[in-house]
Every structure is written in structure tokens, then in C-alpha cells.
Amino acid sequence: MTARAPGARRAVTLRRRISWLLAAAAVLLGIVLVADGVALGRLLAVQHQVTDQLFDARVAADDHFAALVDAETGLRGYALTGDPATLEPYDQARAGSGSTFTEVADRIADLTHDDALRSSAVRADDVAQDWFVSYAEPLVAQVRSDGPQSVTNAQVEHGKERFDEVRAAVAAFSDELSNVRDHEAAELDRWTRVALASLVVMGVVGLVAGVLVWVALRRWVTRPVDELARDARAVASGALDSPVTAHGPGEIADLAGDVEAMRRALRDQVAAVERSHAELVSVNERLTAQTEELSRSNRDLEQFAYVASHDLQEPLRKVASFTQLLQKRYGGQLDERADQYIEFAVDGAKRMQRLVHDLLGFSRVGRLGGEVTDVPLDRVLDRTLDDLGELVRETGARVEADGLPEVRGEEPLLTQLVQNLVGNAIKFRSPDRAPVVRLSARRTGDLWELECRDNGIGIDPQYADRVFVIFQRLHPKDVYEGTGIGLALCKKIVEFHGGEIWIEQPDGPGTSIRWTLPAVGATPLPPTLVPDGALQ
Image 1 (spheres, rainbow, N blue to C red):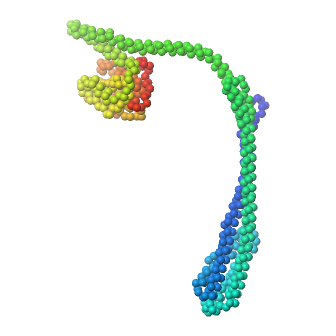
Image 2: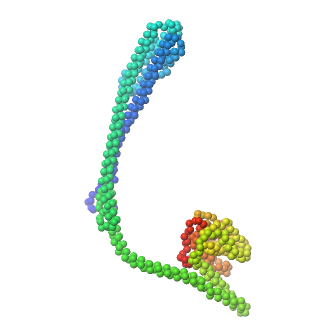
Image 3: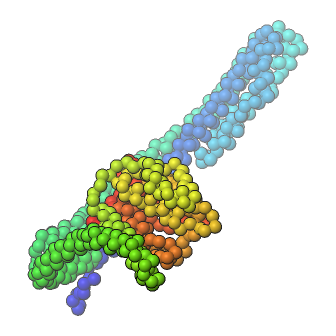
């Protein structure tokens, strides 16, 4: 954060301003939501009373009155015919299967504040009960004992008058029930208007709050950020001497101060970079010249390694030929020490020839640019066994292969690779058993992982990496002949094809050498070889 001048007052932070604004809006919206919740709750309660309680009460009262009417009709039919079947509605009404008017009134007692509804219900039930007791039951008994012909017209008319009293009492109860319904409907209408009004108020409050938040954010955030962005773009365009001014709330003012400090630091750094640029240009020129000189020296070194290996062949052939001729013609004519010296010379010349030959082959890997094709490793193994036929017969070796695949590469180099591995496996055989060499392969993605496994003397794990270094030998040359280049050449061939080679510790006697080569159709791997022909 940038330091402020002593006594300078820090602007109110944006977080505090937005907190105040959102708190005020939340309080206002909370009040409106509470009022709206109360209105909606009351509205739902009144709606339940009107649509459920009052509707059920009206239906129950109508059903009870209809049962009374059916009872009166059945009674008159029985009085006229004496048929007991016509008396069934009467019996059902007398049994009281439905709710009485008093029960209906008690069910909705909480909807009215006076006793008029219940009084009218009690009156209707009393009149109906009196009609049953004082008129209907004696008439039924009379018909059963004396027959329908005993009923007079005066009794029928008296029964109609008595049931008209029941109708009047039920009508009075129905009127009271309608009054309760009208009151609750008015209450429902009032709370509906209140709920709608609260919803409108909530919408207006939400709109006002949104407008206030938008105005506040524009004043506190958008405008100061736009001004800061304008100053920052000016600095980014290269105007490093243009100051960045601070406006707006505390956080944005602090950010502007940080950008201003960054501008000053950037201005100083650019000045320093410009001062050092001239030095870098001169250093780069010197590095370019040195790089060209190094490349030329490297090419000369590569050419020297190739030419030296190649040109050493001729004098070595002469030395080897004449020392062998000297040994053949004068062997046994000199003393024993002279014969020994001649034998040392012949042996040294031969070993020097092998060393130069192997060194020449090592330097040629990657230089000749042979054709990359699909190479069947079965064919490579057949050619290897032809070349090593005499060694195989002499040692009684058995070479086995298990479904060798096709790989991408240069066939001569791959032939040399397999020949060196198989030859080494036979050469470093155990003296107490016939050598067995087994080649196998398995697919791992775009690569084939191959293995050359033997039952020979094995390699100590501590020398697993050392054997791939050129001229490294683990055994005296008088025990196992060789130049120490074979496995280094194998490593160079494998890496030229983009693979790896390593020693795997087997689960039994012998040695397990594994390496990877690109499969046919896979994306070719880049060679990991050092520059063409260079010795590594």
C-alpha cells in the first residue's frame, strides 16, 4: 500500500459504503416482506374458512334439510299407501345419519362473534325433532295399526302446517349462515386487496433499491475504475511520465496509489533497461561470434574423430600384417623372450584394430543418414544368427525369440544393436552351463519395450549405469576380450531412435537388458543423440 501524507484523511471504504447501502435496502425490503407475509397468511386463512369450512357447513346443512324433506315426503306416501318401502327415507332421517344444524353451527362457531347462528340452528333442530315426535311417529303408528284409510285430510293438512314450521326454522338458519358467509367474503376481499397492495409496494421498493444500488455503484465503482483504467492505459501505451491520480472510495484510491508506485518503479526499471541494452547488444555480438567459433570447432572435432578412426586403419593393418609375418617367419628362431615380445605386438595390433573399428562404427551412428523404414526384428535376428553362427556353434548357445515385432528405424543400426546384445550375452556366459539367450517384446503405448535375457555371469547392480559408458570394462581384457565400446554403441543407437536402454535386475541368474523403440505407425520420437558423430 502507498503511504499517505501525514494528516491526510482516508476515504470511506467501498466495502463500508456498500454495506450501509445494502443494509438499508435489506431493512426496507424486510419490513415490506414481513407485511406481505402477514397479509398473505391472513388471506390464506380467510380463503380456507370460506372455501373449506363455510362450504362444508353449507353442504352439510343442505344435506340435512334434504333428508328432512325426503322424510316428510316418504311419510306422506306411507300415509296414503301404507307401503313400508315408502317409509325408508323417513327411517334414515330418524336414525340421524347426517349432521344436525346444531353440529353444523358448532363446526363454524369460530367464524362468528354472536349466538344468532347457533340459536337459529338449535331452533331448527328443535322444530324438526318436535315434528318427528308429536306428529310423524303417531301417524306412523296409526297407519301400522289401522291402515292408511284411517288417516284423515285434516291430519294431512296439519302435517303440512307442522313441516312448514320446520321449513321456516331451517330458512332462518340458512339466512344466518349466509350472513356469516358474506362477512367472511368481505374479509377475504379486504385481505386480498391488502396482499396485492403489499406486493406492489414490494415491487416498488425493489425497483427503487435497484436504482439506488446502480447509481451508487456507478458513482463509487464504475466511474473511479474508468478513470483509473484511463490512466493505466496511458502508462501502458508508453507515457511513463503521466501520473496516476487517485479518486473514489478507499480501496480504489489505494489501488490507484499502488498503480502510481508501479508506474514510478517501471519508469526507473525502463531507464535501467535502456542503460543496459547497449551492453547487452555488445555482449550478444560477442556471444554470436563465440557460438559460430564453437560450432566450427565442433564440426572440426567431429570430422577429426571420423578421419582419425578411418585413417588409423591403414597403418594398423600394416603393423598387424608385418608383426604377424614376423611371428610366422621368425617364430622359434629367436629366444623365448623375443617370441613373447612379437606375440605382444601382434596381440596389441589386433586389439588396436578392433578398437579403431569399433570407434569408427561408434562415430558413424547418426552421420550416414540411412533410410528409416519398418524393420521386422525377426529378420534382424536371423541375420544376427547368421553373423554369429560360428560363435553359437562353438559355445552351444541357444537363442530364442518370442514374437518380435516390427519397429521404425534404420535396419543396419538395429542389426548392429541386436548383434552386439546377443554377442555380449554369449560372450559373458557362465562356465558351468550352456548359454541361453531369450529375446521378447511387449507394447507400451507408441513404443515397443524389448528385452534380451541371458543366463550368464550377470552384472553387479552397482555397475548398471557404468556399462553404457564408452571404454568402460568390468573384466580384465585377458579374461573377456573386447574394447568397452559395445554397450555404449548400443546406447547410442537406441537413443538415436528416440528410445532408452537400461539394465533390469532379473529374478534369477544372468543379465536382463531392456530398451524401447518406436512402434510402426506411432508418432516418431525425436533422437536424443548429441550432434552428428560427436563422441558422448
